[in-house]
Length: 183
Figure: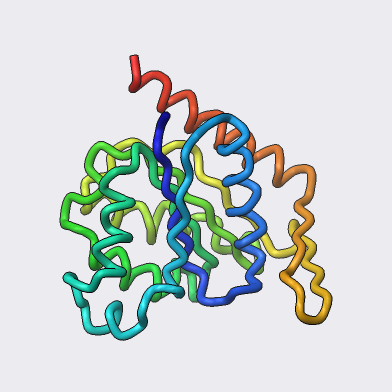
């Protein structure tokens, strides 16, 4: 069974990005893949800010990435780039911590204006960490995800048909690459 880790760089617990990551996670689980999710904002803030490489929470998260065959990097776009909280975690991964991993980027932004943020802000950082094989990323806009939330309940996300199609295509491409590698 292949191991996949989703790294979510959203600082907001009710972010529409969660709708994307939950959809992708469910698709992968339905196709019999092992999925772990690292919600960066749930890691101890002091460990992230002070670069505590030996922190048990950081060591555990890094181990999930090390053992993964594929890594899905998910982030909202702020100021034409991925979030600072995601960058602080990436800084705590080993220098070549993504070497040999298949990477799938998933971004969400308020408008299509930052569509190229995956290529211009994320990919260079990941490439410096050894990432070489990227499957097609997905850039979504907020309007493609309807979020509803009842008091004292978790948010519910409804994704547009176009977005679920593109996410499914990325999941299928990722699975195909993992299958090719297993041969």
